[in-house]
Image 1: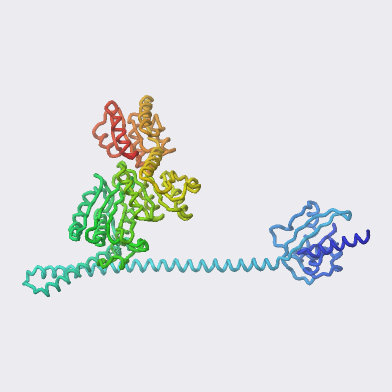
Image 2 (image 1 turned 180 degrees about the vertical axis):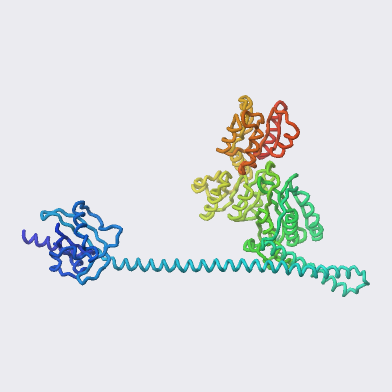
Length: 639
Ligand code: ADP
């Protein structure tokens, strides 16, 4: 028996001594009754010195006074818990030195009464590490702040010197232009031989002077432009004008150059497209792109301009069948003084400023510009400009094709265009995002052989761009339909090879569901009239929303923007005219097409005013059904 007791006691002692922390047991008076090996080492007392010592002796002098009170409080509400949580605890060694600790307390009730077991851990090393870490963090923060300050200062200096440089260039260019004009003028006089004949050699010399002076003048003009833009001093006089005649002028100017090289120059655009831009600057953009296209397309090739009107923007494409541009250069060609050099195959390049200026001119008028090209496959430059006619209906749905293989893209475009779609290609995710934001296509086709995770991410990003939520996405790939596509809410996933019919049907379906999602809002106080319109619209495949008054119409529009509003003018309370002006006041509704359908006799003034803000004015009592459906087809449904 006794032997067993001794063995148990030894085992208990070994256990205590093996513990990694100091363990100290004190009785209800706070006298120490048990300690382990670590406690002795940590505090510097021997076991004998410990036994009977008040636990208060281990508390540094500063807190010792209140310790007895704290012990009593613990005895009142005894539970196992860390001591003094949230405060940094300290303990005192026999030699008086103080060190940081963590203590947890456990009450025990035994036959000897209420005891407390304290487990004490020395956290000196940890605190030191924490302090070091804090110090490092502070130092880094200070250094970072200093670096930021320096950077800001440097930025300010760069901006200042950029501005100074631009101002210098601007004044220099002015100074250079006047003598050049004189040189060119005199050279021309000499060429005309008005002052007497020149021999062949002299003619050649003068002609060289003339040519190079022109080149120099072009360079100076470009420099002046770029420095004006960069100094923020280029002024834009925005006006709304018909694009057709402006484009014709530029085409006429370029034609001799193109024909001289044996190129076919064509332009294709719908009637009556208006833009809002600076007329001169738009000409400059078109001239730049077209003369580049002509310059970099070898004899026998084609240069084609096409124009696409969308709700907010008009997109103008300049497509050539020329030397093309390598992918790596697509961004750099828009930089100042960048010229591809090697791929332009001996074509004399200009100043390297043309595209840099063009890009800035486009962007400063609220548009974007991008290029799709491969060496040897021609180039397509597309830029956008604000539309000058926001109420114009969209005639053909636009499909954005994301495809980095130009031949495959071309095939898809050839499928789509004869079927009444228009198509634009994007060769990268960024480009697709730009195009989608600029032109809100009716559908996006993503052609991927086997989508990588990066490409899935791109599709997800496209999906999540708020404006694009409603745009259906069709994926064409060699993989079977998969969960990733479904999870992203992709409208359709086609597995290659995809036939023409299958793609067209899928797109037609996707476009229809998309355009039909927004209802046609009918505002009419007569129940019979509403019912009749509802039936007609539903039959034509539209969803509808009905309002019996102007107030109701506006509150419905708050909930969901309709695709079109069909508005009666005679309404109880708020009149149709009031509803119309309220709709036009709100930015997000300003472009919702409105069709007026009324029994009201309109005087000429009213009719004129209405014409400016509505897409059609139809009279009840006359034949209005076909014109109404026609107007709807033009504005919301693809033809
Ligand atoms: P440049 O005055 O040299 O034409 P740009 O800024 O207009 O300067 O064009 C920069 C470079 O981009 C050109 O030098 C050429 O290498 C390339 N580039 C521009 N347009 C085309 C195009 N249509 N086809 C091929 N390369 C082009």
